[in-house]
Length: 99
Image 1: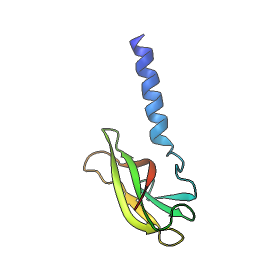
Image 2: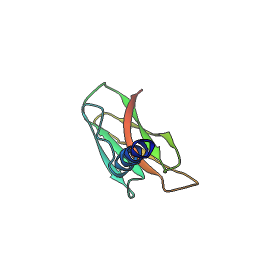
Image 3: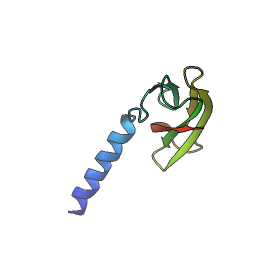
């Protein structure tokens, strides 16, 4: 039974790492750059003003959030890059913080 649970957990983790999550914020869209290590988020609608993309990063050893640059609605994008000293960092989704 433990082996089955372990196999299912590994399969779910591998699927989550292999395919980045879709945009969670309405009116925003993303572009994955640098082999999935960087995400660029554009927002055409939503709250007026500024926003910041927060990348959900993983390197196979852990998970963390990486805050991006400040973007403007219908203007500049917000760019967040996953960086790690160990492993190969990848973006595993994101969310938008409105400022």
